Structures are given as C-alpha cells and as structure tokens.
Image (cartoon, rainbow over all chains, first blue to last red; front, side, top):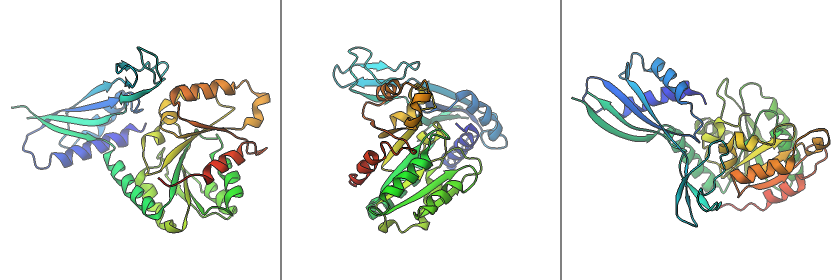
Length: 115
Length: 217
C-alpha cells in the first residue's frame, strides 16, 4: 500500500479527534492492522515518524497490533486462525468452508496515550 | 499524568463515508455499478470494449477509467460510442471514493443502467478502497501465474465475479486454468467465474448475458 498518505491520514484523524482535549504531548498511538488489510507495519512506522514531525504527534510512538485473520465456523461454531501461507477461509477444526471472517481486515486507530 | 483517549476510528473511514454518499446517488438513480480490478495488462479495457460492443444497443452504459497517466483507455471506450471519463491519478495507485464522486458530474446517472469503474491496474490497494459500487469484478489472465488468487487473496475475496481472460493463449502457456479457478474458489467459494478471450470472443456472450440479468438490489 501507500503508507505515506496513510500515515498523513492518521495524523489528520488524531489532530481532529484531540482538538477538544487537554494534554501536553502524545506519547503513543495504538493502531490495529489486520493482516488482510495489505498495510505494511514497517513502512507505516517509517512514514509516520516523518509526517508526525512538527505536529502534536512529534516524537510519539506508533504501537501497531497486527490482527491475525480469524474465522467463525457456521457448522461447528468454533473460531480458528487463517493460515496466511495458504489463505483459504476454512474451519481449522471440521474443515467446513461455511465460515465467516471475524477478524483480519481491521485498520483502526484504537486509542492514543497522552500526558 | 498519562491518560488514554479512545479513538476507535477506521483509518479509511473518510473514504467509506464518501463511498456511502456515492452509493446513495447510485441507489436513487437505480444504477448498477461495477468496480473492475486486476493487475496491469490483464485485459480490463479489452474486456470492456468487447462487452460494450455487444451491449451498447441494449443497455445504457457509461465508464469511469482510472490510470496513473494517459487518457488512452477512456479514448478507446469513447471510440465505441460509450460515455467515458478518465481519472488521471498522477501517482495514486488506486481510485478512491472522492475521485469517483468528482467524476460523477459528467454523467446523467438517472439515464444509465450500468456504470463500470475500471480501477488502476493493481491487485493490492484497490481491494481496500470501497467506491460505493454494487460489486467488484476481478480479472486475471492466462499469462499470469495460476497461484495469483493465493498471492492476492483480498482482491479475490472481495469480488463477486472472476474473469479469466486471454484463454485463446492457453495452448502456448503452462497456465493450469483448473488450478487457477480452484485456487480462486478456495479463497472465495461464491465467485462466479467466466473464461474469456477478447480475440476469439469466447465467453463474452455468457458474461454479457449475466450483466443483462443484473437486478438492482
């Protein structure tokens, strides 16, 4: 993906969300990235540091939580992880294909830590 | 003192909000919108040309073309007598909802049956940017690898239709079409599959028939 414009988007969203809050600096930005979302955590961290300069997010840390794709089986009702080497949506227990993706496509700013 | 402020906002939420605005316009106009995805060179524009040549007297169709540079693709569509608008992204590797929204002013949406959006040739990013379409169609072509669906699962998973194009080249290639389709259906068992050639016109009739049967949800 194009992590530079995404990083800029993250800065814009947080500036907007924090405009009515009182704080001296942002310490950490917590992000969830699902492995199906095609966003590179490493590239995002690199770009974030660059675009955060001279904003309220200058020197803040981007804490990325990678979400592993998980399916819920409609037959046996169990949750199982998707094998990313062979990303077929199949129940890890009963091998049914009747599954619903529960996690793995997120790309969300969950919270920020400020002081 | 440290405090945590909950945000819980999707990074691409702004795009989705604009896409929903597009969606409302499409619904009001009774318009069916299809977003075409593929790698560069799979044949999206050629499949569109063959489709439009066949359907232009039966359905009212318009096309939005997306490319990083040139208006070549919109010019090809316009030659067939179909309204076409070119979005030149100048670097963005995908179309987003705002770009599409800006292009909609060029059409009388109420007077159309189908709008095709031919996305920038890229199997990664376009899958992540909802434009307000009814469905996505993913193309792959026989000179590409039959493991393409496994390498780019999101594009295949989010699509409703798969077109395997350039089947006329099969005798000259090691491409295992059954394996390619099996891989695709493993990623997305609900995919409707068409095999096409823009040279021999194989499969184009079936694909056009399916388009004619589309009903607005």
